[in-house]
Length: 496
Ligand code: NG6
Ligand code: CA
Image (cartoon, rainbow, N blue to C red; front, side, top):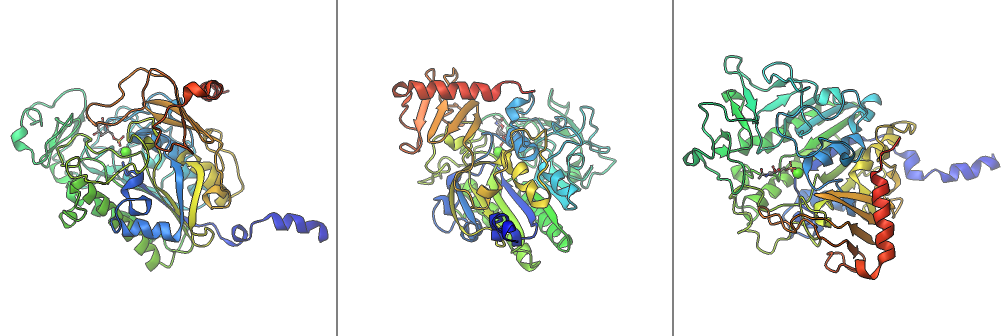
């Protein structure tokens, strides 16, 4: 007995007592670190996100793997850095599925443990195998990579097809009005934003001049499916309803819900009940709408009596952007709001604003409310959450996913030793240092006005002394630059 004691003492008490939780991942789109009140936006903008922060653990150095959507989503689901694979950049809406059917994912880990799993909202990881007929069964898709059910849009709000897909079929499609989708050429007879600007209610500022759906021109071309087309203003309601119903249907069994909102991506057309609520135009109103979705999910958990035993994780797929291609007043109405908070850059950028995002973990049964400076990444969720539902079995294909469950639970203050960040190129974090290799390319993206992080000279920032990456100290620390350059090269080397 005495000999057993030290072993027993090693088991953290809370961990030993908390049963495997339900898991809800709320994945915002383009929501910046500074877009929510609990991370520095004006008070009262996001009461429901703030509730999560108050009742959970707020991370201040948590990251999407990438500064755009598809690669970050690939990583959060597969546990592999996206830049290891070709074809993981921003996908068109008719791209084939980029996760191999049957591959282990964050969802399949829970499904294999007997959880009911669902994907609701934005997918943007491709559908079909390259010969997809949108009027027939849509597969492979989420159901082939670990989800029992799904209610999704294929890509983004600004890309065709502008319809919802439930499991393997377009919702509300009339067979007499089949849908055609193409990205290589216009469809004869269909108006476009470029040719017919008089038909638009929201005009592009760059790109977005192809198919017109509901008075908004998009990327790509589509024809038909008139009754199945979404209404942008109703999209948050649709995804929220599906998420809340999923929770209600499954309250008697363990579940995993991946809720990927369209907010606050373009086109920003929140429901009219949010118009003017933020005082920052449609972008801020979309933040308010996102917060409403969060509130509805929290309410559904409260009403089902599941709050204590559900792990809710809220984060974003990449940093913020203000003008992302529509004339929606976002720049003019920004005022003093800083979407990226204290970080430099934003969406598309190698600076911290590209990947450092809000990240909240609430699980009352185990996680004590507070704040954590641990370096954590979404790529680690697979290896970190898998031990909650079974003996840790390393997933070979999740090769970049490290088990940082203790950091996520607030039991380890450090997290990762290092992290590769992907903007328009790669950068490396280690300890206090941030290294960006020398790169050609524009310093500022002309359309979005984002500082991309490119410079012909290598950049080194001391994030402890200079969190805003304002002073390049590479010249003073050639040894550190060499070490980090080598480490970044090693990280990219092909592995057995
Ligand atoms: C860009 C789009 C931008 C947005 C982005 C993807 C243009 C000019 N810009 O190409 O509006 O859709 O792709 O965003 O078309 S993401 O969050 O899904 O990565
Ligand atoms: Ca995004």
